Amino acid sequence: MTEPSRPPRSRRRFLRHPATIAGLVVVVIVAGFAAYWFQPWKLFTSTTVDEAPPAATAGQVPGPQVTATGAAVTEVVAQGDLVSQEHPTSGTVQLLRLPDDSLVVRIENLDTSDGPDLKVWLTDAAVSPGLDDAGVFDDGRWVDLGSLKGNRGSANYPVPSDADVDGLDSVSIWCDRFNVSFGAAELNPRT
Image 1 (spheres, rainbow, N blue to C red):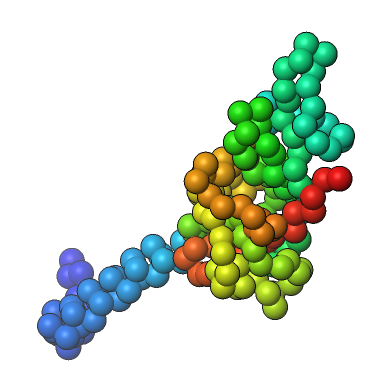
Image 2 (cartoon, rainbow, N blue to C red):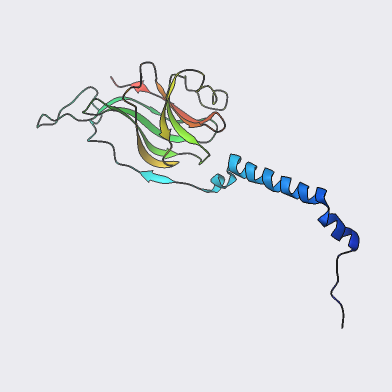
């Protein structure tokens, strides 16, 4: 009968050596931190949302409108198309004024990458496609509208009632973890 083979004595000592154990602990900690920070699984995930507009939208006619019964409807104040910056991004953005005079940013047909700590920001930064200006959105004024609800589809983002939106004429899909915009849209007033 053959005795099972055992690793050489020097390898067994190496595996039990305190420096080897400490090194393995450090590798596990660094790998765990890197996984938390970079969230590499987000390269393979996607979340789709399909929220209805917040109220009956006024359509293509600018300015306050009322229905045949005299009820106010939602006004499209400004709109724009998303352009790619750090990641390929497409969709449209509208700034809506609801009948109660509150504001909502609506993103429709969004298609971008998933990522860690993505936010929707209303900002004063100029928008240009590409990587050159993907990090400028936190240089000036901005209002955080909350976490991105999904990297695909349509969703509404209420603007806080106490926010001063004068001069905030762009929207960014902002990665707060890495301080970069995945994509952004310049909001052009409806006239």
